[in-house]
Image (cartoon, rainbow, N blue to C red; front, side):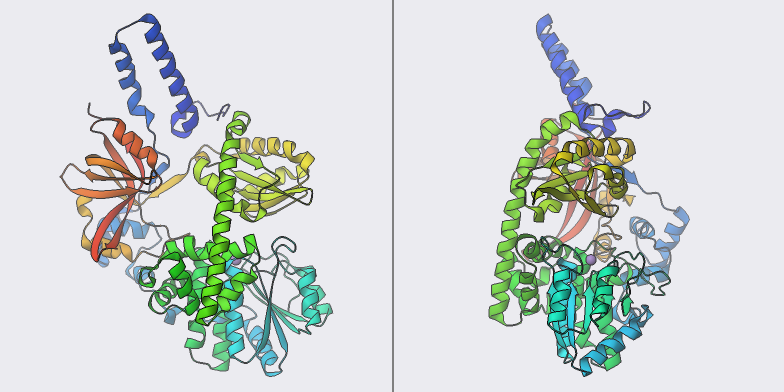
Length: 629
Ligand SMILES: [Mn+2]
């Protein structure tokens, strides 16, 4: 990170971790050398050690402690009988009254908004029912990711059960790319399809939809992406369409498909269970598609998780056993890091059809066979991205020597299917706008990911002279460029990031709900806190801050990655702490005697050998300046 310009007033060490580290070690080295040269006593060296030490270990994140309105928080705490830190966490999630708290904690299926509030729903339902009764051929056209495939599977199974003649088409990620393709439309024409329903795509594909109309095919768009000029479709189901009266904008594509079957079921008067049974698919898609976990999405995920825990469908069961998960213990973590990557691995490494076959499989034998295939694809995917990560990390050393505000790495051999994952992992580690590129047909292609609050699409716009193609949004995008433009693009992109990135955007922020004393962590507190789940975008896990803590016993390092220790506060209360992927904290805590520190963490309840355990999950730590020697 050489050459970053920082306003003079800012204390650089807080934000420029790397710069300071280098600076510090150079100082230490110089001091050490001079001490050696001057043959001064050990004492002097020891002195420099203590002068510098308290500043060495910095917290990894910027701590943002929210300060909600005291009066409202007190009133809320009394109204619903929860402790002040819990009331603060609720306030920080936009909940200020008894009724709002009730909605938040007791969201239920009965309170889902009517699907007919979605514009064009009546028209779409009538069209699909006409297709069913007229034995027309219906084609579902889905995207290849989790959202697209689960949404397609849900519509496919539901429509089939209603007696529809239905098929599906999923693009090849590499040869066809995203959205309605020429090959796909040709295939519909060949099969004499008269109705196409898009899932998780279609809202900006005006040309392709016009082409369908030319062949006498009606198109119902079932999408959640941001609309532009609306396509000439028969009906458009999308809560983001301008003028929509639907109360919630943030449904995922599978969520829109779910509203569609809810409406069809209402129209055909079938039993509620005929559509409710797909809540598991909706939960998986909602958790995987990075949509906000508020309102209706919260209900989807909660209810879907309950179904998967209590009565999982056979294909899910087969996957759980490969993941070594007991259904009753299934949580968001397992969807995000177990189920979703396995579904996505199919399209990334081979073909999304593998995922569709698994989603649609019903017999025990098929379920197991297809789940095993997805598992294998996922292992392959994992090896591939781990491989690229190692090479990318090596490249970084020379990269950082020339560029300090972005990461742009390219290797012709890198597998295009995993570049997005690698870019996200890079950001997790280095927290800078990142572009990871591979080669395809003589061109360079790849994925762009951004840090919070930094509009990557705008940054790419400024580099458009170097790009053949770019598309995406604030946080993620894709680019294509010619090999001879690579060096220029890398330089320009870094310049743009350097001038647009604010100081705050260079370090990840931890939003802290409240300060907390360890003795306030009691059964009641944890029981209420548990009901804040499921966590995700739009509903982050509550984080707390405790200060003036000391170690109790020796810290341990688990699997060379995770730090585990016990803390004690000034009142003598002790707690077990686990910090995932923070070996740096282990090193710091063991390097000094009697450290005093502050911690940011979440609290969770775990069942271990039939015993309930409370655990503090460490997110960040800061050593106190008032340390004892
Ligand atoms: Mn989607």
